[in-house]
Image (cartoon, rainbow, N blue to C red; front, top):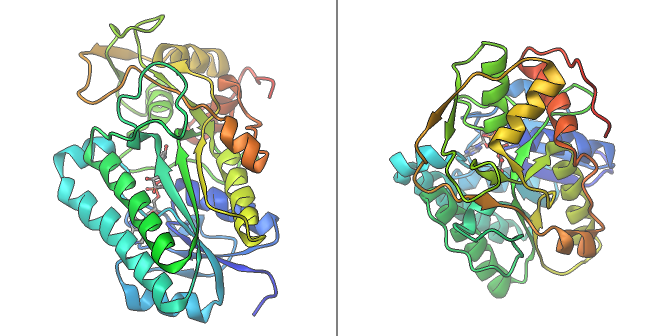
Length: 333
Ligand SMILES: NC(=O)c1ccc[n+]([C@@H]2O[C@H](COP(=O)([O-])OP(=O)(O)OC[C@H]3O[C@@H](n4cnc5c(N)ncnc54)[C@H](O)[C@@H]3O)[C@@H](O)[C@H]2O)c1
């Protein structure tokens, strides 16, 4: 057994979890991936041991925690497609809430107290045009957002009952890829804007559907806050370090604080790849707020976390090779 602290990473074979495992290993931890490979990839598991099992399997989860002498858990495992959650809410209730029950029960059985939870800006719903602070009322508008809010509340109930150390991290739109080129985004089916636009630009995917160009935003398209996955990974290492040093509970937004519209993303792709993104304009999609932008100041104050890759051209330059593009215009970081 290594003397590096072992960190359980549920969902560690997925997009964000795998990037976090790489960052954990670089920071001196031993990531232990726990993943059922429902949307993740075994090839993403490269920085420590793995257990391919389901978080709802409480016995295997408890056994893994004890066997690997786990010091903290980072809980990424979840179903994470907003549209699918609207069509099949029970899948989300079962996997996301059921998974959280499995995790909390295993924590209780084994005495594991440090939990970092992947939450989402989807818990805020229609929060309004301004930057969103953590105290903004959480009124999710789709089943996915509801399950993430439920997981937050369940964790806090267990903190009150069992004295756990929680870090709830609400990500905005995770994107980009490992700057060293070892990892990238490979969701199947892909539903995220930047991958879909890059696939359309390389003609590996259909023309991009742009849902709504009549929003009350400067160019009429939706505005989102894109956070580079490498920055997200660094924020997790900081949050974990805070808990390992006995720090108190955290609830933090993880975003860049900068809003970028859908049409601005398409312009950035054209600049970076020199390829135009073919797109079709569609009516607004139910449940899409016009603007979702984080107020990132609390994460800066509590963890000293400031994203390194704020420029959308840089984010796209890192993602583009995963979708068959040469980067023709290297953005400055
Ligand atoms: N991608 C984003 O922009 C974003 C934004 C906010 C929050 N999040 C949250 O971050 C987390 C990771 O998202 P991602 O984009 O990396 O998704 P992903 O689908 O790439 O990763 C999820 C991983 O969890 C695993 N998994 C799912 N259910 C499981 C179960 N029952 N037992 C064990 N493993 C299971 C999957 O196989 C996969 O490897 C999710 O909790 C998601 O809700 C993502």
